[in-house]
Amino acid sequence: MNFLSNYPTEILILLFLIVTFIQSGADKLLDWKGNVSFIKEHFKNSPLKNSVPLLLAIILIIEVVAGILMMIGVYQLYTSEAKEIASLGIALSAITLILLLIGQRLAKDYAGAMSLAVYFIITVFGVFLLNN
Image 1: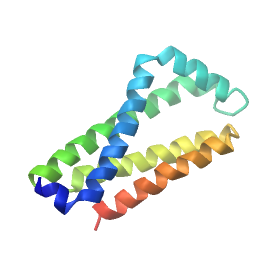
Image 2 (image 1 turned 90 degrees about the horizontal axis):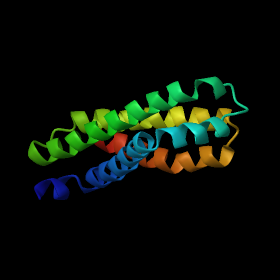
Image 3 (image 1 turned 30 degrees about the vertical axis):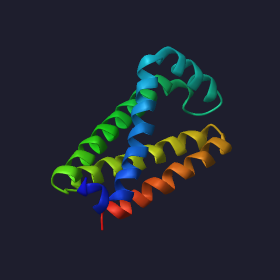
């Protein structure tokens, strides 16, 4: 359990984001039609309204890839204290959150956009820690 004593904050942030992104990806996969329907309604008055399935698929892929990279990163921190894969996964998480923010702003869902700030702050802190 040496990696927990050497990288406790990094590991906890990674675990938080793994749960967040893997659960989000799993939800999209298990209820694709429901998610597309909800998002289409959410974006009905935005420039994104005709691209919802494609954009949702892109977000799904990025979320799952980020989650997998962060899981591999946690394992590597445990086995070799290597940070590169975890850093890549968490940076991809930050990019995903920026894409989600753009969507929320275009949909004029300012409360939804604001709620992403909490995730983004945690993610940027993780990026900072993993790159120092």
